[in-house]
Image 1: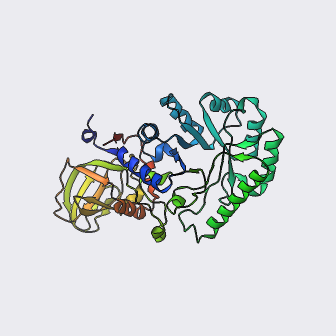
Image 2: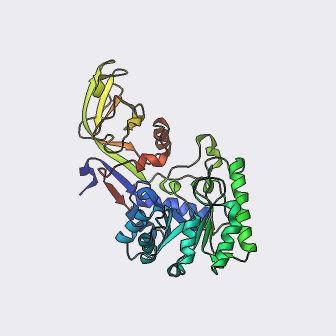
Image 3: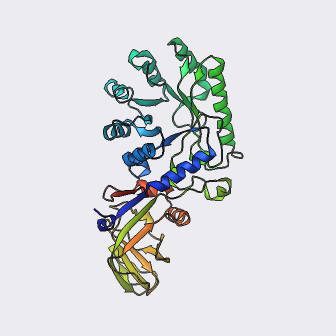
Length: 378
């Protein structure tokens, strides 16, 4: 079915994803990419993003948050030889679910002593890659950095002399890496943890620390891997006041499109929609065919949208299936026209994120299954 006949849809440009990956590789030619694709590929479609990233872009390692996400990938892409890391909701303490890692070639990112003991104790996990995550200051998941010696002792007790991947995660990567005390402190702690493993005679095959914000600042080039997420879909991870610190010129890979259902002129104060919200000024109202049932949340009220270069503002309450956009009176917009909520313009995408008080990746992730994803590899 042609995309234009679907009414509302998210158009995903896979060639733009490739451009972003190529750009990142230019800055990190010595590092392997562990592409974070959790939350349904940041809302772009988990399976298609992984499939194209492997087949068309040569990415071989991917990270998800849950065992369920990993199982979905193996179910739909059973023959693709990629490594899949499960970062948070491991379910490793449940023996039947722990077997899924063996049966489906999945790598658990161990961050809790209980899971590590299970991993080391059971002979069947002997040939599964050992991946450890340390908490160096984010205070979320991870072995406490000050307990590195205890983890090392546990490994030696079970005859393990090698860690396949050692990692941590920055808490403040949207802030300057060279000025923010927490970032500086975390880098130092991770270096200390690595040194303790090396001094204990435990080799580290791979290490990683940098998420998108750190990568935008050319950090962590002494690690073997980088872990980009949001940046490969286009948006910056930097806080607005620190954008000058970033070299990243990512391309937004998606366009959200819908249809104009109806247009009419209003005078200031005329009631609109639920609650009879008064029009803030005179103008031309366009009702578009998306609402909170599609992922256009009530936070969108007051946000700026554009049609053929003319700025309009979302007024009245966002409905489940439609949204009111008020344009200057006489704006040429007609029933049945295609309407773009966001395009590849990073400035307007950032503006929408700011005005809705929504993180950039939330804009796409919150889109529901009612919005089909259409893929183009131009």
